[in-house]
Length: 146
Image (cartoon, rainbow, N blue to C red; front, top):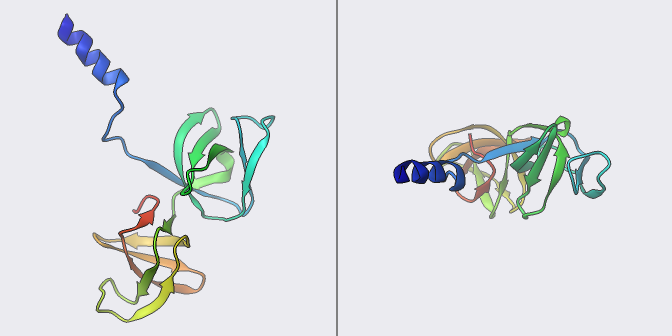
């Protein structure tokens, strides 16, 4: 009997450390973030960046509670979100022509830049930003790297 109680407790009351983090991106250039999960809830702040990656931390009907790279949180209607396709750099990075540091450097990517992911390998991601495409190392990125 005691073993069953312990197992039930472990299953329901201890968070699953192996649970995968869920990231989404903003679908539009202007997205309201609200204090609560309804249109009647006041607007807390407004994002003005399409493709900005955000982390899903809760759901309630058609609303998603999110967290951004700066730990701001709030509720966004699901119609304003899409599957993740972007990341943010947490440090300045070099964009290379090929997935190796011995390749030609193309550009310097500043910390906080939103990048669109095209694909990823073990240690590198092919990205695009504005009219530039290239490869960056996977370390120091925020968002789910495919």
